[in-house]
Image 1 (cartoon, rainbow, N blue to C red):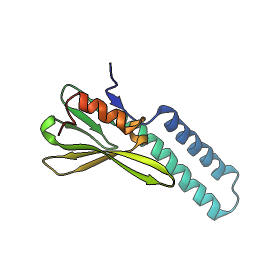
Image 2: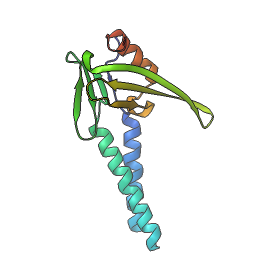
Image 3: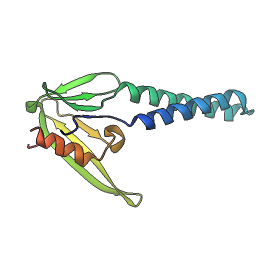
Image 4: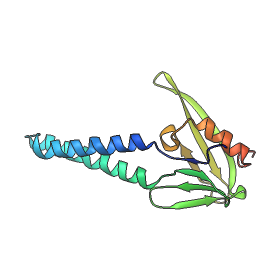
Length: 139
């Protein structure tokens, strides 16, 4: 049985939340200069917000009986076969390593959904294989 749900890794989200919490404590107790305290506080709030919203958006992509479910920070969208214009992998080099992105073009509203390895928790090629096997990526 192939995987049908993909989302950010739990350990990564927990690590972001933990580092954000440690930075918040450090900003309040350790940092003595005002600009440093402000910057550490902003970084802490940013990490905590990122961890919270990443947890809320899990699973980011799922194959269900209704179609492909895409979850974002503020809502969920169900895409049927007729709504998927193109599903592909984009690959490029960045800082000496190969980066893959899963791109989904939607048909009626011409939106481009881009998923990274962080978003999916695995290599985007594995997700493309599962989408192809389920009949969503043959376009």
